Length: 193
Image (cartoon, rainbow, N blue to C red; front, side, top):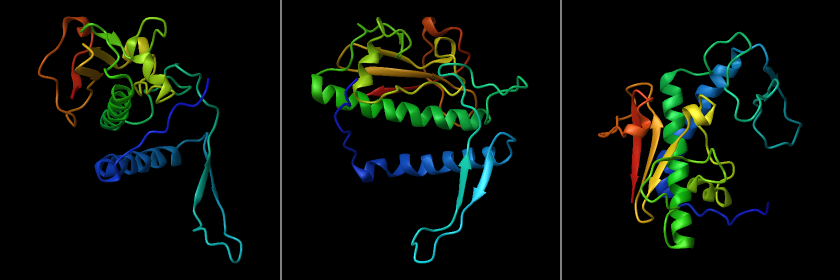
C-alpha cells in the first residue's frame, strides 16, 4: 500500500491535543514501570553527546492486532476507565482530522447514507475504511475487539457523528443514544462540522 498524503496540522489548534497526548504518555509510562514484562534501561550519554539521558523501555511481547488487550492473568486492559476515555477522546480527534482532510480532498465525508456503521471493522462495507489512505491504521477502541468495542460512524456526506464507549464521567455523554448502539450503556460522541 502506498503512503498517503501528508497531514497538515495547525500547531495552535493541535496544542490541546498535544498536551493531552503528553498526559496520556505519562500515564502509559507510569503503567509500564509497574509491569514485569517491561525492562527499564537507563543510558548514559557519550561525552559530547547533546542528548539528555533518560530511560528507554523495552516492551515485552506485543498482543495480536485486533485482540483484546488483556494481561495473561485475565485482568482488565492496562489503564483505568478514565485513561481509556482519554485515549478515546484522542482517537476521535485524530479521526476528525482525517475526516476533514478526506473532505478537502474528496469534496464530502465518507458517506453511510446516515446509517451507523462500525468505523472500520469490515473493510468491504464500512465507509470509514476510506480513511486508511490518511491515517493507517484507523484508531481502535482501547478495549480491543473492535466489532464489540469499536468506534462507530454515521454520515450523510455533509455532516458526521462519531460514537465511542464512555466508561467514566470525564467525557460528556451524548445527548442521544441511537437504537443501533443499545448494547453500549454510555456513549461519547462528536459531530462535525
